[in-house]
Image 1 (cartoon, rainbow, N blue to C red):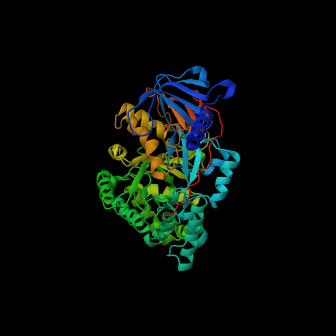
Image 2 (image 1 turned 135 degrees about the horizontal axis):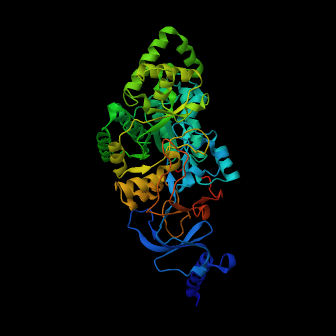
Image 3 (image 1 turned 120 degrees about the vertical axis):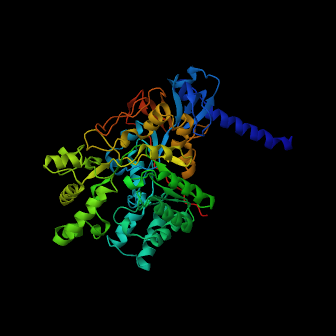
Length: 536
């Protein structure tokens, strides 16, 4: 009898555990939510299958190919004719307005349940306070952050175009270590933005090494996404190699007239790099336009020292002529080529009537011919009044589709949290994930449904190390989206961007409805997801 006691105890423990998982919930129901009759596409890439999905608390507790008794669910969702998938993971988003848009409706209504901020070198600081703010008030999606190189450099070095001293480099390394300790998932850079534009490879590699020591990744808006695309991938590869961590090309693209068609060579280069043992990955948004600051059209040298220094240079007659020439050259090549309509204003605080209009529209309003030279004059005028954010129509569909097909590509919106009535944002803020499903799966058949879902769920979750998210599996977190594959689509356009996604019926974050029957609930069940540093 004595030898059987451990076995009996183990049986009792297992029995209690199972009973706890399936014990009656509200109103005597066994499950809090029961999703019935849908096609489960689980995030692994495997073929979808008909199954019922049962949730209890913040977890998936059962996935059954045999129909479950609806009486077991306190809330039953009929998903007949719908796809049941893991919630989408937005690997690259700009969530600076999060504390006043806690519901993050523009993202959640397209199925996003986890969102990563702190990109392009610009993160909150300190990260511990940002995470605490998420937890204190709740958010629509789960929220995670990178630590930004640009933030650290600005604090330590200001806006100078120079290499750091040994002491300054040590201080920045300490900031990256602190950020990783407070939950950062890696280091981000924005090498076309101030002050990241002034950093050299040695500096970034030294900081990336710190992130790698804690098991993080390096993600970068690279130095040149146009004619210098291959050289920029080379720099990212070198940083990843020296930092001994994965390197991610964020919003992979071939931007501007001189880069069109270069995506094939860029993808082949990444494949070749990976064969040497250096891990390089990428994310992408599925549009033929980018979005960033008006200042991106200015030459690099004119931005050193920040806005005050720029304004002083722009008033110097000799320097002004040089600035105009180089800005016109940027409009002529890097931003599409001799077509000012490609620059569309998104947010213009000093003249909201320009929002949604183009540089060509502005030139015509002034009675100017739509040339790069006249466009440069207007760019300098706009910068003198405080700058603007713009949409740049400078990508080609062939490049977009080629990148999207690549097995390494995951989906990231690069969108800013948005709400109707504020500016004229890039439509990616409202439509990235549903656009993949509607345009590139259903209409153009660039991807199969299971491939697309994996690129938006399981693959990014695995790459980043998200614990028990990104798949539909028993015991995993109940981040779930239910959508209609026949109608899911992006309604947002470049002309009318403030349009929510269609065809997304239900979104659950940690088991609670953030979208219910197509309507936002503003339930804030999202959590701060802190990366746990791990030594390598």
